[in-house]
Amino acid sequence: AMQIAASPSVEYVAPEDAPADFVEAEKAAEMQKEDLASKPENIREKIVQGRVDKIVNERALLEQAWIMDNNKTVGNAITEAIASIGENIKVRRFSRYVLGEGIEKKQENFADEVAAQMKST
Image 1 (cartoon, rainbow, N blue to C red):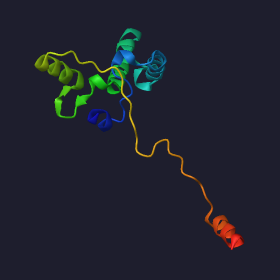
Image 2 (image 1 turned 180 degrees about the horizontal axis):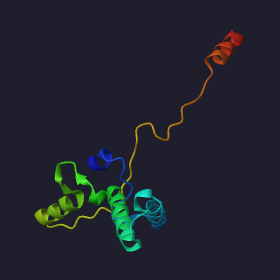
Image 3 (image 1 turned 90 degrees about the vertical axis):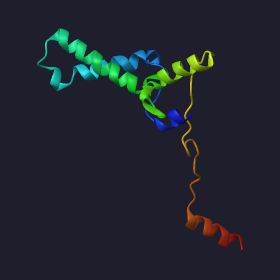
């Protein structure tokens, strides 16, 4: 829970869970970048794939640096926990709650409110 709260960019559990349309859109965007225009086509594909993999891994929970020890990923920490306690642990999903998100504030005009009170008295 702390890991998810500390990493607002996390959107899915593992890199394999990334939506295919998101990955394709990122590939298309990376191919259009000017720094790749002078590169050969076969090299350009490898560079783009590396950049897209980096973006996808930044958004995957299991590939994030663990907040308790930055030298490990969350996936490594889970693997160590499995080894130490002997139980299988899997993260299937998560939900993020942001303070105040989804709460609609009632909009009131103070002048209209005062006028309504004056009429009632």
